[in-house]
Length: 333
Image 1: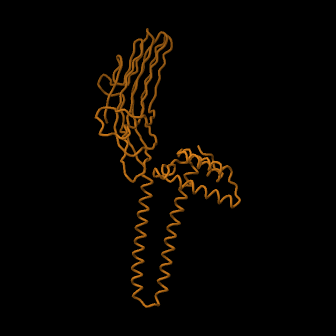
Image 2: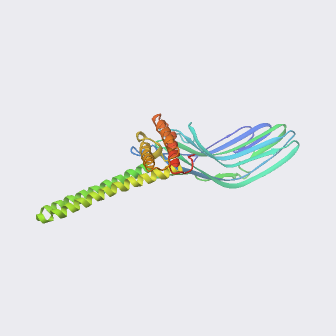
Image 3: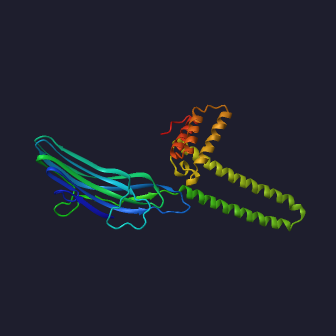
């Protein structure tokens, strides 16, 4: 990890102190990672970013009209987009804030003419699930912050820095980034394996045909039965693939889970149009069967309109609500 600090006034690293006014200090430990840009992969991948810290700090002070000390430790992520070259070591390049989680927070308030003191010791972890974009570089970092504020006749300190022996009062663990399997990549892999199976079946069929031509005409009927059996296998495989995709769509709509491959259109590597067409079919089937469909058609039409305006998440959310109306489930978030 890289490391840099900032302090103001008399504060040490991650320790702010003040005698009449405001003092603050910040320490940051960070590391960078880039999500691989695979030409045939989906644009976005699901990921979980985790980290943790341990701390042993204290706050103390007094004030004639009041004093306040404030401390926090956070786990944060910045999106730098597609960098032209490797980032300079030991620096924090500018980027868009992407996510943040508090690991620890502590506040000490000293009332008028009061001497106050508080110790703060513990450890905790934090993690959050997010969606990362392929080809982008991110910085994941911890921030340790102390701030002390008093009136002109008071003193307050917030100390989470090094003690007199040089031992750090805040230690942070490794930041881990776990990227989920690329669903689109898995589907393509399954399709490739299926094509290999079909090629093997075709080769096997050709060998059988070649063998049958060497036999007498009495085996012609047997040859026809084999062809029919292979056709049924192909039909069964096609039906299996369709049923498997339908179950995945139904489960995702029922819970309104935002899988990138479902809420993005085909132009961006997704299957939002497939979701639209499948939902339209299920509504029509229910109507033909005389089953109640609630407001499913209304939400469906709103989703189609949003899709036409490139409001992909809005379209997917309306499709979720339509399906839940169709199945009498809960409303979508």
